[in-house]
Image (tube, rainbow, N blue to C red; front, side, top):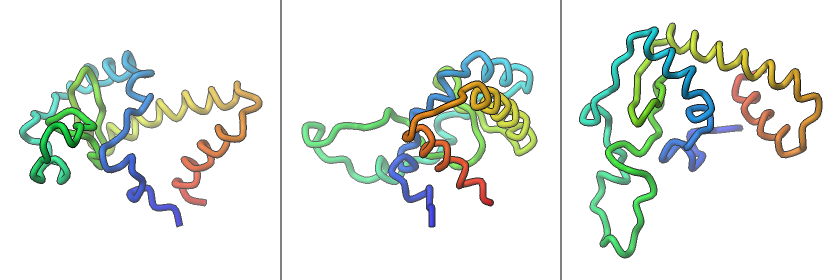
Length: 128
């Protein structure tokens, strides 16, 4: 059984290309929805960073503070800020992204084995 929450990427979130490739789209959506960034002090501390830290020479900080990622509710990243969105807003945003992906897949024609495995992994999380 596929359990995405056990994957290492969920411990610290991920440097997902979705945020970098859609900067203009995200900025426009944030302005249209009049979203406000979440204050850093309102974000939960990651348990790994809340624990006592070893000496700096023995451990490197993998992700910058104050929030290392892994927030599991719908949100957008933009210009160093996090914007929470409700379900309706997420439906609108993700629908636009899915449309872009549908177009790209239609135009791709042929993809490599590793690419197909990545697409399949994402699709399998959607169910039958």
